[in-house]
Image 1: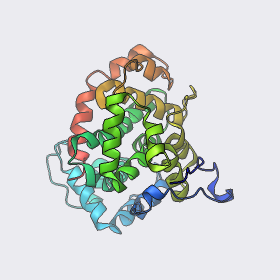
Image 2 (image 1 turned 45 degrees about the horizontal axis):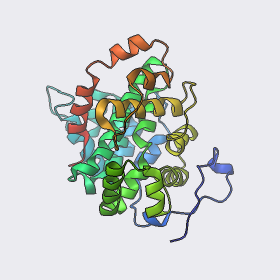
Image 3 (image 1 turned 180 degrees about the horizontal axis):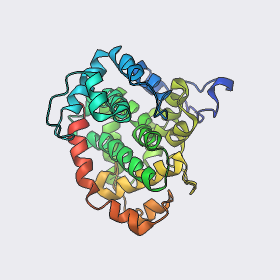
Image 4 (image 1 turned 135 degrees about the vertical axis):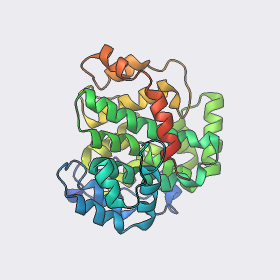
Length: 292
């Protein structure tokens, strides 16, 4: 296998040069649901017509069915059954349904390895990071939906490698955990690409927004402390690790205060109080949102 060098996604895909080569390790990856990518275009639009979101979701019956399943789960605790996507939008709101659609779309990648406890930690980390990023966005403040999506997708390269090579990636994780190896270097040795530049390739192909693409490509790099989507995502990933959702446990990780300071949140004491008991909510969400 030849060593492959991938670049981060260009900041403006429409004026970009040649795209990075596709990593051989994800040649068999199924396409990301087109509906979810179209929803990206209205991610920050709180005034998007309800009908537009409903019409988009109706194009993908499987995605719609998954949204209904989660909408009717114990996580939302609704007193009456939701029986259509339009009903879900009315009851839960357009923004919540958009987040559910993105989560369900990503769940298609994870479905193949959800039965493996050692691999499921990768999915759990993504959900925890998304929820924490949304919470941090309330405190910074920043765009909640954007930060949730960036947190959700920041490890999409890892999930893609897992979807294509669950046994190989699982073995690599076991070795890295046992020997305290650098997971990115292990990925490069095994797949000629790590999950950051694999995710960067996917972000380029999907023409994701610039800030979300940056969160995918650079979440393992030193984070800017500037309230950006990247900073919030990095802080959320560190906080997820601290709360028990690390893919690989390591000594000396930042505590919750240090993690949140990377965003940065304006009032650390208040922020820490906001996260009291948040782990329980993450667990409830994982139980309800995870693909069956």
